[in-house]
Structure formats: C-alpha cells, structure tokens
Image 1: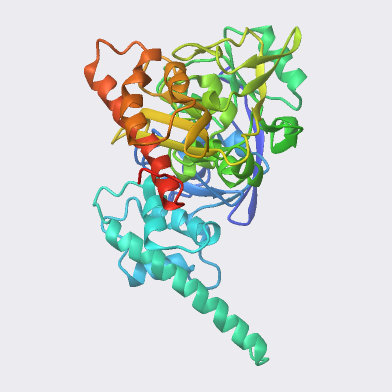
Image 2: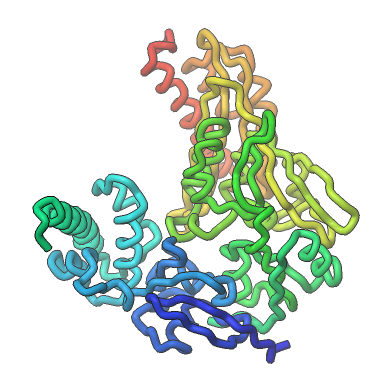
Length: 172
Length: 290
C-alpha cells in the first residue's frame, strides 16, 4: 500500500509538470520537495496560518490541506509565478508599502492578496481586513499588509488605465 | 506533515464510489474537499486505508432549483453557496452561515456535504440546515433514500449514514417570501469554530411572528432545533418583551443545566439574534415598539 504511486499532471506557473507521486503527498510538499519551489512556506501545517496559500485554478487555497493528487489536472500559481515581465502589482505594493517584517508569511500574504485583487469587488480596508482572516502574521504586521493590498489595487487600476490610454491613442 | 499511507481511488460516478466504500466501509473514507478529513489524517487521528475521492463526480456539484426546493450538490463549496444567486434569493440563511466558516481559503475548498457528514458538533452549517428543514439525499448499496436533517446527527462525529452510504445532495425548501434570516455566532477566538451559532428564519406580519425555525450549533453535544422557543414565538408580537422572554427558552431543547456559562451564552446570542430582526423592522418602520 505504501508503495502505491500515481501519476499526477499539473500546470505550475505556466509549466506542465508530470510526476509519479505517493498519494499522501500534500500539495505543499510536492511544490517544495519535488519541484524545489520553496517560496511557498509551511507555517502551522494545521490549516490555520495561510503561509502555504497558493492559487489552485484561480482560487486561494491552503496547499498544506490539499493532496497533490486532488489537484491533478489543475493550474497552480505559486509566489514564484506572480511576476510576469514586470512585478505583479501585489509585489510592487509590498515593496513600496513595506508589507513584510520577517517575511515568513509573505508568500501566503501575497498570494491571498493577489486572489483578493481579482475576486472581491471593491476592496475597502474593511473587506481586506475581513478577508485576511486566513493569514497569520506572527510579526503582527497587518497594518502594512493591509496598506500593501490597498496599494496593489491602485497599481492594478493604474496599469489598466495606462493600457487603455495607450490603446486609445494607438501608442504602445 | 505526512498522513499515514493510504490507497487512493478517484471515483468517476457515485455508483463507483459506493461500490468501493461498501467493499470495506470500516477502513475506507470518502474524501470531498478534505478540510475536515485531511487535518485529522495529518494528526493521525484518522488512518483510513482507502481514500475515495469524490471530487470529480460532476453529479455531486452545483446548485439548482428543483420545484419548491433549492438542491445543493454535496460537493459544493462554501464559497459557491455564499455566491449563489439561488441560495441568496430562496434560503439566504445558508449563505449567511457559510460566510462565517473558516476563512477565505477554507471556504474555497470545504464543502457542505463534507461538513455535514463529518458531523462536528461545533460546525456552523448544521444550525442553518436544521432551521431550513433540509432533506438529505443519500445513496448506498441498497439504493437511494432521503433523510430529514433532524435525526441525521446521532452523536458527535456520528451520523445516520449506514456503511457504504454517501450523501449526494442537500435539498432545502424555499423559504416563504419575505422571510427574515440571520446567523449569529460567537466564534472561538483561536479556532473560529462557533462556541454558539444561532440560525433563524422568521416570517412576520403586522409585527406578529407567523412562523419561524431556529437551529443552534456549537453549544450542546449535538446541533438542535429550538422547538420550545419556536412554539413560544409563533403568534407573538416581535417586540422587546417577547425577545426578553425568548432567550431563556432556547436552552429547553438542550441539556445545559450543568453548564451555566453555556446556558447564559446561548441566551445572550438568541436574544441578540432576535433583536437584529427587531432592528431591521424598526428601520423599516414596522415595529411599533421602537
């Protein structure tokens, strides 16, 4: 039984990955130990802290509470996959607003933030604070995490406006 | 953290899952969203030898209207319930309870069927599902059956599911038009699980309570319907005097006599939940007492 190995196919940060794995392999261990994507952190390992948050088919989930085999066929984005040509708005904002102290929860904070930018309508400070329920920052650096997500929202809008303006004027 | 080793099987159909499950019900577990089961397995509090993944069975997913019911597939996530137009229109209490479960990431993954079958006495959903008079659609080796939610929970973590049976859907009768609903909970400060959770729907005409159901979770060995309180409320004015008398009656359907803290907590939360309706009627100018 312990020797059962099952093929799993995942698209991780745009790259197709095929591996044979033991069924009990948690997604977070698959990312960190099989693929060396150690940006995703294991904090509590009991589904509380959110440091292991990744996007699974565009949904923020805790990768310590998903079997890799459950994610078979899915698209996954980890913190390593946020940057596309330029920094993701959430990365830019965390840098600008100093959204981290020790940095341990930061991958989870940024993935949850990236999810919120796309999924929760208008992002007020209140909704951000509510939605951060699933993230524990042991530095208690929530103030700057909230400011970073607010700023990321602005950056995203600025970029969209700039793109639209460029299109309207036929530039770029 | 790794779980103990297990054999993994992914079911394509409910029949296939039942076949596997009935094969060795003692040592097999059904895996839905995994947000109750996997944490237990990681702590080796559960050690199933076979995990039957029902996450790919499309028949178990989604929310649709079936006549006078809202039918919710067992493998429907909390987030899908919160965002469902059908749920929000016809049984908003369910969305109100689902919205308070865990956190964003948990709600993206955890399922209503998983929650009910896990039967944690401190889960949120049972309060809403009990108040809403849900019927459970169950399939097993001997065919299909329905089971009222009232009677489904037998003991903490134990349900009336027979060996080899799987919950396939939750059927919720549409609430009467104009019903008022609320789910109010006192979350444990660390875990977020309800120390008490009160789910209520009421219909009120001319300030008089016509009908209403109340489900309570978290505080007793099992979630329960507060029937004494429901009977008391029917036909009464929804005013401060009624609400003041209502609170103490909530404990009548649960054995809390040896726990004055819980008894008081329940009373406080029932009073607050009912007062919310008072406020919403006052805001609409319906409550003559305000």
